[in-house]
Length: 209
Image 1 (cartoon, helix red, strand yellow):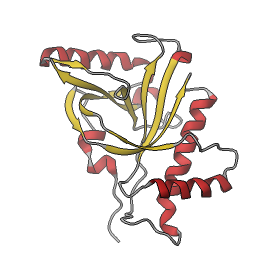
Image 2: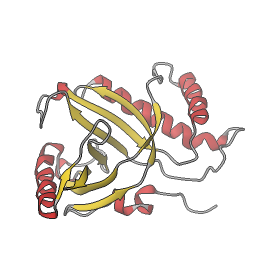
Image 3: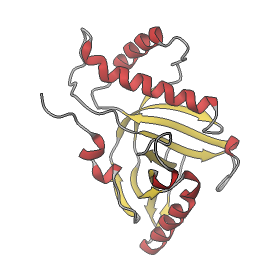
C-alpha cells in the first residue's frame, strides 16, 4: 500500500506559506463544519472541536467496515481550521461576541450517506455528543492573501496588518462576505507548543480594485 496522503505536504501552497504575505487561489474543498458563537475557550467551541475530530477519525476508520467508501484512500486527518467574525464591526476584543465556524477538511470520497453512518456509529461510542449540528459542506474561497503567523494568537493583528499593507501595494482589497471570512489554519497544538513557536496560517479573501 502506498504512502498516506498528507494534505499539508501535498498542497504546500495552501498549508505551508511563508512568513511574507502571498496570494493564493484556493480551490473548492470539502469540510465538516460546526457553527457557533462565543469565547473559543468556552464549552461550546471545545465541544465543536471534539465533535469534528470524533467524526473525522470515524470517517478515516470507515475503511474497516463492511461498506468501505468508494474511492477511499489512506490519509492523514488534516488540521483544524476556523472562520472568524464578530457581531460588531471591526476587530472586537470581546471574545463573547465572536462568531465562528470550526472545521476540518475531508477527502473528496466523503458523502452525506457516509457522514450519516459515521454519526450513528460515533453516537453509540460517545452518546454525550450531540452531532446534529455537524454538517458536510463544500467551501469555495477563491482568491486570497495568506501568511504564516508565528507566535501566540494575541499577536495575530501584526500579521493581519502586514497582509493589509501587501494588498494596498498590490492594488487589491479584502472581500469578506457571509461565507468568506477571516480564516485560520492551526498547524500547532497549543497544549504542546510554546506560544512563541505557534504556527497559524492566516487567510483573507480578496478582490482586485
